[in-house]
Length: 505
Ligand code: MCA
Ligand code: AMP
Image (cartoon, rainbow, N blue to C red):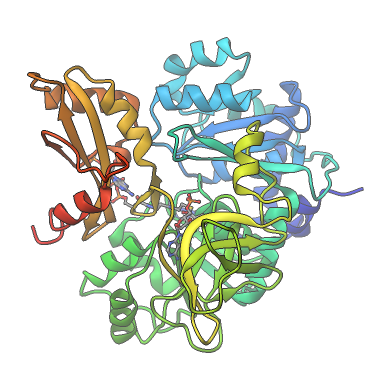
């Protein structure tokens, strides 16, 4: 028996003194040292009574300790549930309850606020700060540096990642060992990663992009990562000469292009820049090539599916497209009404099937049935078209979603909060173009008859309920919302009206 994900990502590197992580303080962590640290955390988890299959929810800052906690979960057969560090206590409460997490790991300064919630739901609470301090590390420090890897099968769950939904209720996407491993192996090969690669890692590690794409691929290849706590323009520019590859959301690339230090010489030795999580403007692609001589490789994925398509490594990387379905992934464009496949060249909804596609939504069989067909095709909610050369182009979304700086925001979640505020009759939340984040959030509020809603108080209520990146950058008061003859709010009219709020300012 084996643990396929652990064996390939981590076990293969046991005993290797090759560099794995270049840390911000100048220290280099070898693959072997990292594995010994992970084994200590795995021992700490087991000593706390966690059984294979138990969920471990972690809201911790990015650090090699946090990454070791992920590796430890894989080794101990636990289901890793990473959470955006921006989530409020109210948001966390839902994830802890819904997932039935057996352990919650948080920053030290969150312990007090989370203790009652963890206790209420019977979860153990441990702390872990970015410098490695906290109760989890204290327990791990006492533990042996070896751990007997727990057997797992390809269809056992490895991770639970929450993704918001159009109803405002987040859904836990269940990702199996096989989902993560197949995609990491495919991408490592497709993008030619080897043990010589050094990936400049500036993404957060609580999402698919930073954890399952950037990190898992590097691990499959046995390469190394320059592990930055976050995207810091000066640091990225300083460190690019040490790297061979970088992955980022479009905001990374527009910020780099806005800086004159970012030029051909700085990236002469780089072999690959990958973009995803949000649309990369064709203009950014073109400017990037002009400035650096590199063509960004754009790919397309989702939390539920990992990566689905990619532009070619060799061959034409076409601006404004997300390339071809990855090996082993089937993609079709269907009529949203009938589900029938459409002829090439017609716009429809994108559906995908393959070993990358998740196992369903945690304890939400109806939602799973609505989006994951019995024949294995997953309805992505993205609208696309396949061009005459087979490249997939994403032309829009069939779901009410805003992507700000690579973070997904579902308007419904914000509307539910706004609608509850005193003096508010109803609201509509829309995404409008934003020069830095691609899109940003605007809230349109309709007051109750005779009421004058207090916008400061509404801002404060939003802060308590929702992570900062979801807050409307502007609240606008309107007498009424535009509606069609069926009574449906015409958000397209609002988006059009406010489209210049953040681009021409
Ligand atoms: C930070 N802020 C944001 C965002 N990030 N507001 C809107 N959208 C954002 N994305 C807010 C903070 O709350 C703060 O607000 C202010 O902006 C500055 O915060 P700071 O941390 O300094 O921001 P930053 O460092 O400039 O961050 C911007 C960023 C970051 C570098 C673009 O958001 C980022 O790393 N994004 C990557 C997201 C990602 O990995 N997505 C992948 C999801 P205030 O000043 O008001 O307090 S996975 C996925 O989508 C699929 C599967 C896929 O295909 O990959
Ligand atoms: P998430 O909810 O974080 O899983 O985000 C998945 C969504 O991000 C997809 O359904 C797309 O709408 C969007 N997305 C990811 N990559 C791209 C891309 N390269 N171009 C356009 N949209 C993308």
